Image 1 (tube, one colour):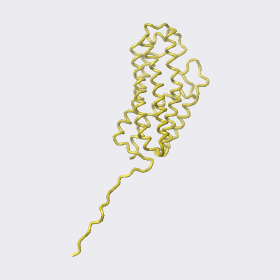
Image 2 (image 1 turned 45 degrees about the vertical axis):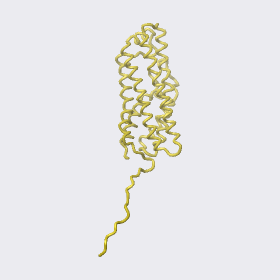
Image 3 (image 1 turned 90 degrees about the vertical axis):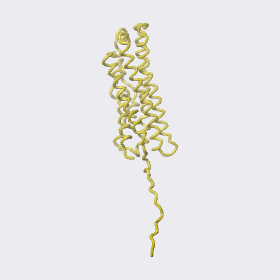
Image 4 (image 1 turned 30 degrees about the horizontal axis):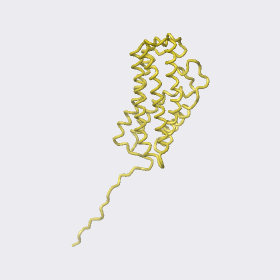
Amino acid sequence: MATATQGPEVRRVDTVPEGRTRLGGERPELLLAGITPLVAGLAGLIVLEGVADRPELDQPPAVILSYFQEQDTVILGSFLLMLAALSFLWFAGSLRAVLRRMEDGDGHLSGIAFGGAVAAAVLMLAWPAANLFGALVADQLTAAQAQTFYFFGDVFLYPAAMAAAVFVGATALVALRALPRWTTWPSLALALWLLIPPIGQGVDAPENPAPWTGLAVLPFVLLWVALVAVVFARRER
């Protein structure tokens, strides 16, 4: 009587195509860290621009001093902007791990992207920090000193835009092979736009940056971060 023989055991190997990566448990972290900068940044701007009525740079020093004297409001708005910068840095760390798995070779582009994000986050922290300190010592400031603090904070926006360009551009280059073209090519365009110098700016810049400069699109970096977080979290594994 013939007996059936069992063939060799075949094990199923779950593979991931080249250029793709599994997010797994990192997905909630990436989403949260990517959306928080946008939410906190918008909340901070609403508090400073709306509630505290943040003045233009060409306003008299006395007006700027009265703005700092709205201490609790200015401190709250500045704190929210600093929280946005810190969550932006957290997102950059989470994204670095994903980009490194997507990148071949020595992973230099993912490292460049993270370095640009760290520089941008530090400068984004310094921008509201000057306003926060001005509010803390508002009772001891003269009008001229208040104007100096106010001007000093906005200086950090220029290099922040350039550092963000490195982060956005390097991220887009890594993602060219794994993400849809509608996300990567606009990202490269945004990176180039962020590098345009503030030529032709008036005395009220960067409060009202000219639309052709990098400062005009700097706020859109937070929106880009949220979109990138959603795209990476939702893409097929």
